Amino acid sequence: MNPADLASSALSVFTTRFLLVILFPVTAGSLYLLCLVWAGAPEGRFAASAIGDTAGKLGGGKIALLLLALLVAGFLFQAALPIIHRFWQFLPVVPGRSARHRSHLRTKHRLEATRDAVGQVLTLPAHERGAVILAARQAAQRLDHEYPPMDANVLPTVLGNSLRALWAGVGRSHGWSADAAWPRLYAVLPDSTRLLVDDARNALDQALALTTVWVLTAVAGLPLLIPAGWWILLTAIPLALAVLSHRGALAAVPMYRATVQNAFDLHRLDLLRALHLPMPADTTAERVLASGLCDAWHRGTALTGPYDHA
Image (cartoon, rainbow, N blue to C red; front, top):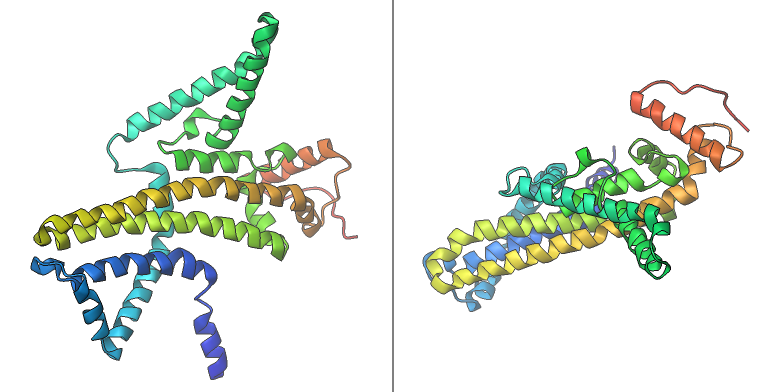
């Protein structure tokens, strides 16, 4: 392998996803902690003017060492990203987890009762029917976007329930099970659609990464600020940024859901072509075929039936 190939291979790790989702949050949190140290907070003083003076005195060797430390931290953070996702969905060690779970179940049951009330609409006076129908539609929409269909799958967090509702809902109208079909459908998406999906997923992951980094930064910065007296109030900055980042993650879920649903709407038949399976004659036949495929993928069994190599 020539030097150009080696350089290209080394730079290939710096993808857009790595820079936005991993390196940017890690760098932001690290800069906050470095500014506290450079300002003299651990020594019981805090001088913002000292930050620029200390940074300006850094030599090339120290700068290179800082960059290397950021890269190492970034790669470690990237490896932990699946754990971070699970933490913000399940909150395994947060007090009140069971109470949050029960609260979400009660909300889900209340929405289901409102949705199902439309079945009794004909027994109501005519002037009340419109409000009941509207409330039922809104409840059905909230259930579809905010909660998984089964009570057993309800989680103690808004984020976790929204993501479970996403994977339970997208593709369902066409007969597809997203958790089985999506890895295969993603592989055959055209570049333009894959770009939209990746951008939406990166926005969600970046928001969760920032939430995690700001919480960890607030915890790590607390002992640095204790000797500095009232400057300990600076801890509110990363905590506020963590709250904003988490709200950003919640706001990113609907966009991610829309891009995945768009992929199913427009390109699910491309998956059948890639599998060399016959095209269904109508939507009913598609639902039967898609259900059979997803069941086979869930069970890990071989597909049966004729191929279409046209």
